[in-house]
Image 1 (tube, helix red, strand yellow):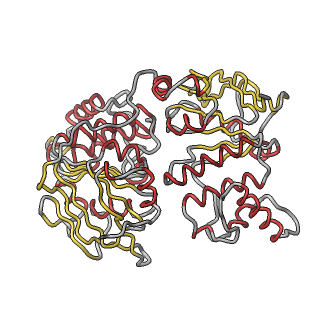
Image 2 (cartoon, helix red, strand yellow):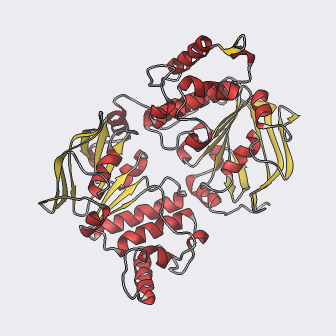
Length: 504
């Protein structure tokens, strides 16, 4: 196959940090090239260099055999290179057509002609999108299609896709995979960045694996498997599928009861609607759903951040609906929110100070009227050891840690705070395989210790592998509560998209 992109001995440095070191690989015409690696492996940096967001310090880029300098995304687009990043850049008040042509059409614009071209592209790839739809009215999956159409509208031949399935339902993932396969049949090429090995094995032709900024593997899909890829990524053997060998549920001992809970947003619109569930002692109760359907509001209602309009919440049969956040922490509720930087940690504080944040009211930290720093540091050192946090010590700044190690700090703190119940909202989002593996083991261990666990996740493998029961949420309502063996990914996908079983 013809080489369309050649990256030769690319290196990139940020001060003393080596982001990429001597990275070389090729992208061929009609190929899907998967790019794998843990957080900080350098895969995003190398793609930002190709897309013109960064410039390499060493090495060269060849496009169709000719050495090329790419100084900006505008340069990349001239060569038919587009990148769809994890966070969409769409104007919600505009139509599909307006978003697609924004910044790409000049002078007197024939909107009808543009709309017709977009409709043709949508129909060609089976997207079934109305070009006149307003972005705010579209689902997450439909918005991703708009981002893809933006690239296709610019006659893209090389498409970089960064974690493209992160917030999609199983059906939407199936449709995306079909698009990728159809797109490369026309001689186009795709770089597929993902940590989901099953998806990589489904769609990729060749797979590049990076670790610590360097290339550690470049293999054909037909010559490898998920286990080998995982070992290359993390440098050691690692279980990929989370499993819970036995259930630790104590029947008839409910830790959490939520009965007909309703909450509203600032505009008075219901974000939780008449929601009821129970979490038993030792149980891992999973909440599956597409992001933005009330998962965060559910966690906030339990932790005390969001007030109830109606309904009741009890912890071990004690009504906690009127308790403050502080009082719920004291009652034994731990909470790991989805946005750790905004809601769970202070980057400029040390690890020890972050450990201290939610228990600063406790007398155990006092030495007279001062904080017993020696005791706090000793406690933090124990957590650094027990949770395998990569840091030089308690005085390390939390903001200087990798995302996975920041999450371990938060998890270590909340495991102690949650003496009765731990609420986990997307605890493995954005983490590499090693950190994910550690989080999963921690969840299972705490359920074995008799705690109730509420696990919110968009990762179905996580939900199926860890949970005793699964509730599927859609627009603030539970579509149903099931045991894992009652569900298939296809059925979960339907429930996540709003389908509801008829009650017989």
